[in-house]
Image (cartoon, rainbow, N blue to C red; front, top):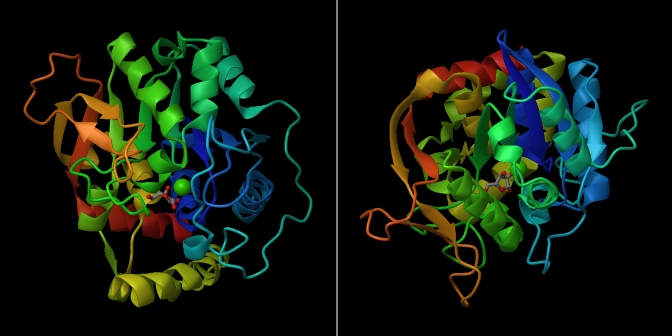
Length: 312
Ligand code: BDR
Ligand code: CA
């Protein structure tokens, strides 16, 4: 049984990832930590609460950091909607967030049950960097750590062309996190934007999910319409990209991975087009300890099946 702590900035694909995790027979969601990212923290906390209500499960939501450690770069409201969930009006009816800060909740849980929790980070890494500054031993207290972020050959998805959104939103936080795992000698399981692009979800598959006509599939259909329109208009594709669910699939079923490479990854902090780039030592030349298991390929049919299971 995977006991998950999900750090997230919901976000349309964050919502899909959380639905997937909640439906998995071998996983429980112990906590959701919200962070500012796709949209502001007030929206991401509210959206996390909405998602928990859609699930009908009693999952605590903790509010974390509203802004990046140093500089606000950009948000992704143009992809996810101004409210982060497609601007279709979903709001939580009864639930409210816990009073504890997300970074403190993460440390408390990791200390209460060392080695038991799998942390899945599907937003900017600000909360986790803050937690690491408070307790540098956090990595050794986690079972696994999965990150959606980066672009390992610099094919990014932000205005800083080589950088991916979660890393570019808070490069300093990402730098802290990747250095911490290097110091620990452990491996971050990384699902990057390029892997996401290789595992796109065709419209034909999405239509079968819409046809399920369940409360969850209708929620998914409503919140994802705006993102699909963005992808059609600005990327010229009639499909969805599920960055966060792809990372969640790796968290839930590690054997879904069919190809991965262990390398050293560092985060660039400077440069007009390189700030936020995840520079990968593909040639293994820098002599530094590998800190990342880069997920390159996974079983796409199993991925689609996990997505569908989350919408039933
Ligand atoms: C990541 O950025 C966000 O917009 C998505 O939710 C995902 O976590 C993809 O680059
Ligand atoms: Ca996200």
